[in-house]
Every structure is written in C-alpha cells, then in structure tokens.
Image (cartoon, rainbow, N blue to C red; front, side, top):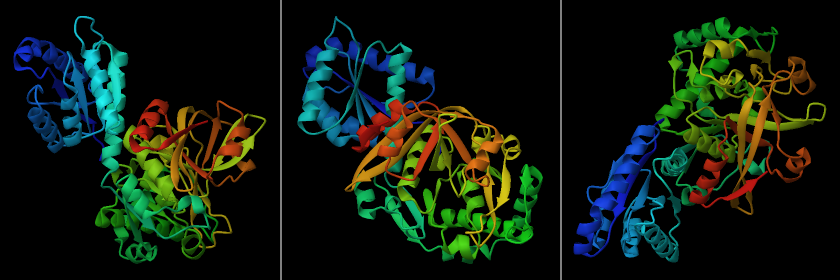
Amino acid sequence: MIRKPVVGIIGFSDGDKEVNLQLAPIVQAQVDVIHSELVKDGRVDVIVADTLVTSVEEAKSEAEKLRMKKVDGTIFSYGVFSFPNFSVVAAQNGQGPYLLAANLNPDWPGMVAMLASGGALHHLGINHFRVAGDFHKKEIIDKIVTFAKCAKVKNMLNGQKYGLIGGRSLGMYSSTVSMQDWQKKFGVDVDHLDQSEILRIADTIDDKQVEKGFDFLSKKIKSIKYNGTSFTPEKLKTQIRHYEALKKIVKENEYDFIGVKCHYEMSRHYCTECIAAAFMNDPYDWDGKKEPCVMACEADSDAALTMQILKILTDEPVIFMDVRHYDAENDVMVFCNCGSQATYYATGTADYEANLKKTTLYPALDIYAGGGCHVNLMTKSGKATIARLNRTCGKYRMTIIPAEFVELPEEKMAETTMEWPHVFAKLPFDHQIFIDKFDANHCHAVYGDWVSELKMLCEMLDVEVEMF
C-alpha cells in the first residue's frame, strides 16, 4: 500500500507540577513548530499527543494512544529539561522507532533533556535517533522526514507475507532464506506455494482477458520478434495467462511480495515467466494503473526482500538485475538478467506508452525450451542507488552502492545477451572491488540517492551496512 509515513509527537516537560506550569508554553511551542513545519512540508502525516508528558502515567498513556493510532514512529520533543524516566516509560509502551528532538536554544536546557533521556534509553538497550537544531530549517525537517520514511519501512515490513513460489533455483544458496530468521528479524511471514498453481490457475483465465493483454502488447510494444517455433502468438498468450494467474495468486493468498522459481520447470517445459516479472513490477498493465507488486526471479528471496524495502522506501518500482560483465572501454558495470525488469525503467516514468515503445520482446534462448519471450529494454540514464541484502553465516548486511546509470548504443547489448534487459552503471570506485567483495549474482536498484535513508533503516533493522 502506497501511503505517507505517519509520525507521532510527544512533548516532554518537567515532572514538578508547579515548574511545569511555568515551562509548559515553551514545551508546547516546540511541539507546535515541529508539527506545523512537517504539515507545511507535506511529506509526512503527523499525530500529536493529547497532552504534554509530566508524569510516568502520562508517558505511558500518551505513548499507548499514539501506538493505537498506528504511527510508524514517534518523535520525543524536548524544549526544557524533562525527567528521563518519562522517556523510558514512553519508549517501553509506545511505537518505535524513536527520534529525540531538541532545539538549540541557550535559554532552556532541551539539549540536556535529550542527552539525559537518550542515555537512559541506551542503558536499557533501546535504540533511537536524534536531531537538534532550528525546526524552521529545511535540513532539520529533512532529517525528520528521513526518519519517518525509514520508520514506515520497518513497520510496514512487520506482518507482511512473502509468497515463495517454487523452491531453490539453480542451486543458489544466496537466494534461500530461513523463515524463522525472517519472522524474528523482519516480522515477515514466508508462505511456500508450488509453481503448479500458476499452471492450474492459468487454465482458468478468461479468454477475453488474455486477448485484452495480447492486443495491448501487440499495439504498444516496439517490436515483437516471433520466430514461428518457440515464440508464437499462442506462446505469448500463455505467458499472459501465467501473469494473470500470478495476479490472482497474490490477491487470493494476500501476498505483499513474491519470488518465482521459473528455472527449469517453467522455462524448459511451459514458458519463461518474463512477462510476469516485467508487469508485476510495473505500475501499470493492460488493465491500467496499479501498485507494483515486487516479484523476484529465480525465487531469490533476499532479492525480493531488498526490492520490497526499496519499494516501500521510495514508492517506486525496483530493478531486479544480474551482475554480468565489466565493460572496460566505457568503464561501466553491465547488469543483464535472463528474466526481466519493470518496463518503467525504459524512461524512468509511469508513461507506459513511452516505455513500451522502447521495449522489444525477443524469443527466449534455446536453453529455455518451454519458449516464450524475454523482455528487452535499456535502462534510462540517471542517478541511482544499488542495494542488496547479503549474509555471512546467517548475519545480514546491506551492500549499498551509489551509481550513475548511463545509456550506450543499442549494439552494446549484443555483446552480452541482446534478448535481455540491460543496465549500464558507472560506479564510484574500482570495479575490482565489486568483483572481489559482492556476495550475490543479483542486485537491485532505484533512481535517486537513498544512501542516507538506507543507512538509517539498517540501524533500525539491526542490519550491518556495507558501503562500496
């Protein structure tokens, strides 16, 4: 579900009632500034506590009320000195993650309260984040918004359901996960479904819906290169049926994101799942606009989770790609995967007309004897962030790479596999570092600079950061 982050704000005051009567207006003024500036900014929805906290009882009740209102995280605002035990009680009963906020005001010891409260929280092992400064300034509001976006990801992941359709593909260890580990660490439930369900449900898809998809692709795609044998109109319709079946599977099983094995049961005996991979991840199909549903090829579960994190964080489709080659002539890493990626990345916009005009359907390679098509496009140039959850002895880390996508002449795609989608990326370091250190054959990306957000999110999730 695409929505704004929601944060709660609690103002903490002095525990002495008479002192609080004098200081409450100062505390309230800071809460009001944070609230009004966030509302003016518009990127975050805000819920303010009903009253300032001046006792343990109020700390518990106000924190509980914000939690019940389903905030993604909570801001603790300090305008004057506040008893640190109030913050501890609020944190133990509220909705984390927590952001401690103080104004740099020499007249009043809000900073003292923030540091004392932060120390108390750390004594109890309660992680938190801090921001201090003038809340009228954009850079301070940006820090709060970053916190809110990351808190949204953490809390939206908790309780989600991942559909693992098929088992381990091609013997890849880096694609398999422990359902117990995921539930404990991320709050994500792993539900295993057999690929035969795609086949069963595909046979029930209404012929009119299949013809609708076929007509849409026939009219909108730049070029469909049928070969009369493994890739025919009927085979494309089979791929459309598989995509429609996956849509039903996602809806009926209430999956939030999925991974599909494909190789080799599907790709050698029925068809490749490339049409599904493209349009599940796209923000549109022949039925119109829709929310993308993350689908990872080859049942790569850590890929799917990385993509879901990026999707929730950015509200954009996410690229799934293979690490294929280093092009020394152009100093670019070449990412090129056998499945597909969202056609969205042909222009980096939701303009399906423009994207599909840059997309070609090629016959699947002979090794995929089930036939069907691969979906070819070149990713639009632009600043991007590459990320991937990797593991060593079960311990998670997120590899984060700022990159610059570039476009090269189309014939460059023929140097690897012309039929597949391509990303050409300039990395801000020697490519040999990537080759020596990166621990998966798949990685994932979105447009824009999301390094700061991913670092903060990793801290919230207790995942190590690995910056390349």
